[in-house]
Length: 276
Image (cartoon, rainbow, N blue to C red; front, side, top):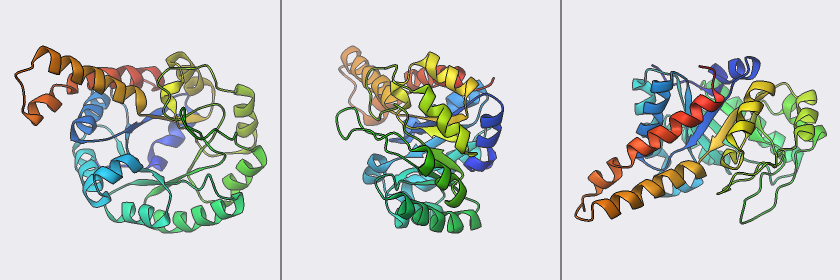
């Protein structure tokens, strides 16, 4: 199946009571496990290359790798460049196979964030690529604190930026290793009242599965970004393999052995939030 943009999968999710998973890819084994899980469940999936992934594997390499998988999958697959802090990174993603790019202007004044996102959207849309933006700031569990999304700024961004999806901050936090019950539903409803685009929650690993399900069914949140809990699955599986098979030294054998656990965890995530 041909790779798709967010525009081809998110509007249906937003209007029909389900959500999609934006899964953070760090290597080939992750990406294959994620696509295998999506095929088993029968739902679209979003493969995401964030700053850490791109620092390890350059955009021209990871973009083509994800596109290779997407074009051969039996379900729709979005190849998404996550947290592009510079327009040049996003443009490079467009040139090298990504079907969706995120410009993260969340630390910028809202007018500058809107202007830069709009400039990117013009280029991206001409290439058939979708754009995600962010308003407010989603903080980090062991780092910078969050700043909730201001409804007035979100309304402006929705009208003026040209973005196809909007990442918001309503209590979600990046890199949470334990689930919390921090989502402010009143803040979310205030944003839904003044926006029209599909909404995105980064830091999905910190949101309990039952809350993710509720948000998917009852709100316009249509994309959850998930990385930490899957990296935890990988780490646990890797340690078990090395402890059980100390004689194994081949990189390929070791990494391939983590894939069943990654597939299983991913299937559970997908079944929680998608309509199947």
